[in-house]
Every structure is written in structure tokens, then in C-alpha cells.
Image (tube, rainbow, N blue to C red; front, side, top):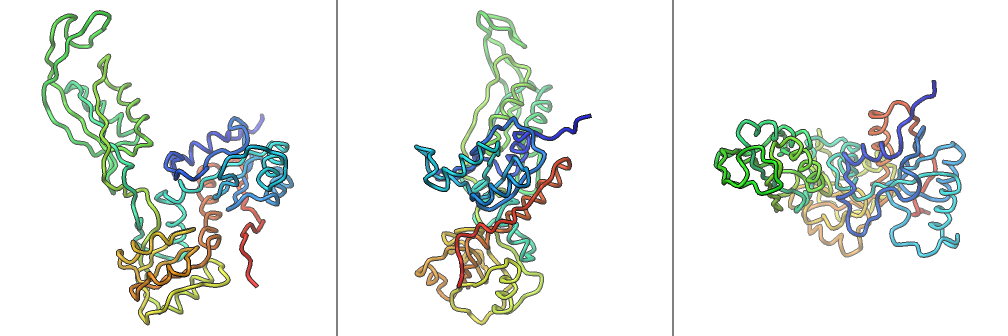
Length: 369
């Protein structure tokens, strides 16, 4: 009997539940970049960056699917002639039937994404998102006959609605009366054609992330008895506690600044740490952001963190520490290398019938003398 392997689209669908592609930043190019999503997948290669050497590694190991953190194409390709590395990667990947999928800013924003993974690598406890994002939440309101309200509610919950903090199945329900008149061509569940009908209904309100709105509305309509379902969708300014940049947590035991930075250096494998002036304080609360996180310096200070660890901090940005915090730049690649082990753990817990390989190719473009 032939062994069954998951299709690439099934793996992508699973990852979309963890880091929805619709949350990616406007400049990003996450998603399936090359390949056929209908292909079966017996193995996957995980990397931070896709290079020609990574493609060669996939060919040698006969791996047909690569999952990377960074997309190897950010802008559009007008020609594919092999003059640039990106073009050569496309040619070689297509020639060898290799699919390439990137999960960049969606994984940066994900609750269990890059920054939480970095925080856990550093042994932090009580971890939360440093800067939750706004404008991701919607409120969906519908009106159902009293006896069908519970069925509609449960359908919306099962589709992903009703999560607030550490609670699920959250809704607000209000009794009232709805009126309607069925016109020619209709098939009314209640009332008679041509006559105004009054029905005792329950107003059901739930909160949902925007990327789940369509599936929640579809589930609501399926469970609803009416031929035409009345519903409203409201944008909310509330922050989404499950999505955002950076993470902040606490050390189990406080440490002095130099001792902690030496620990960070060892834990992340970075060769050098650029940092602002040390303040002679104990490190208890730590803020982190994988990748380029200097835009979060102010947020790290407001969180009460003693130190902020990230990459790509510019010269003048170190002055923003203002003797309130220690800013530590461990490097872009070094702060995101945890993507390898994190994605490995995510995949092996879900899929047990194919091989997950972590790339052995060093893709860090920055070298140290």
C-alpha cells in the first residue's frame, strides 16, 4: 500500500491557522512563491533565507518543499534570465520541482511567532505581546429566532469567533423583535408571503479577527434558518491580544547586565552584541523583537523592561535608551534564527508522516572579522 503524504496546500492551511497570511505587512511577500500547492510532500527543509546553496541542499536531500522565514523575492521580477540570485533560485527551483513558501511578517505578528520563540529561548516567563496590533478585530452581529440562537452562536464559535483574552465562547445576546415581509419569489421560514411578520429574535454579537470573518459568516449562514440572513460587520479599534510585534517577559531569577548579556550571546549564538550604556541595574523584565525591532524602543521603555533585545539598531537609535533601558543589538539573523527550531517543533507535532529537516546552510549575509 502506497504511503500517504500531506499535500503542500494542507501544510500551508495548517500554518495559516498559526500565522495567517492575510496579516502580512504591505511590503511583504509571504506565501507560496514557487511550486504547485497540490504536490504531495514527503519532506520539508526549513531555513531563515533561501539561497542557491539552500536549493542545492534541497536537491541533494530530495526535498520538494522549502519553508523559509524571509521571502527571497520582495519586489516583482520582470525577467527571469538568471542574472540575479533570485532569478537563479526561481529557475533552479522550478527545474527541480521544488516549492518555496515564506512565512515572514505573519510569523512576526503571530502569538506563538518569532518574538515569543526568542523570549522562550532566553527563558522568559509570563510572556505577552509587546505591541498588540489594532484594526484586526471585527464585531459580527446577527438576528435569529430565539429557538435557533444557540445553534447559530455555536456555529460562529466553532468557526473561530468569540475569543477575548483567555476566554472563548464570548458573545452578547439581546432579545427583541424583528419584522419582515416576504416578497414574490421568496421561501420564508416564518410568516406568509405578502404579509408583514413580527418575530421574536435574539441579537447575537461576537468578536472575530478580520481574517476569520468570511468563515464565521459562512458558518453563521449555514446554521441560520432564514433564507436571507440579516447581519452587520463593525470594524473595532480594540487591539488584538493574540497578534502583534515583539514580546515582553520576566526572568525567573534577576541577573546583572553583563552576566545576562553573556547568557544572551551564548543562547542565540551571536558573535557580538552592540549595546547602549549599561545602567548598573539588575535585569528582571526583558523585551525582545526578532529582526528589525528598533521601532519598538519606546514601547519597550513603556513596558517597564530593563533591557530590549533586537537587531538592526542604528547609531542614533541607541541614544533613545535615555538612561531608562539597555538596548542590545544581537543582529538580525541571530535574533530570528530561532525560526528554525520553532518551525521544526510546530511541524513535527502536527505531521508525523514526513521528514522535517533544518537547513545546515549558513545564510547569514553578515560576517564578522
